[in-house]
Length: 86
Image (cartoon, rainbow, N blue to C red):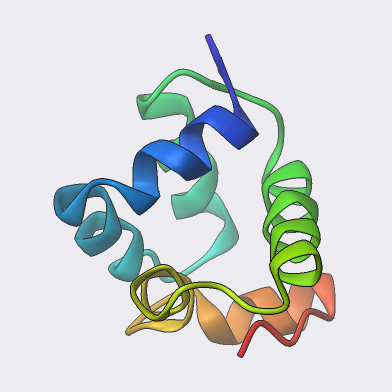
């Protein structure tokens, strides 16, 4: 298993993972995505890690922010986690 932090770094370096993440539409799909890639942690843990990364860096790189905010999960991140990622 990999940690959420390791997986976020992997996502940042992979266009394929970014594109797959953009297609995620809900919490269950994100849970399946994390499980598929053998990531240790919950959807909530993933949201907290994204928030911490955003706060630590000031903001995500454009491509990472697009992966998170892009066509899918941005809206539900706000709904379930109260996060404003962009």
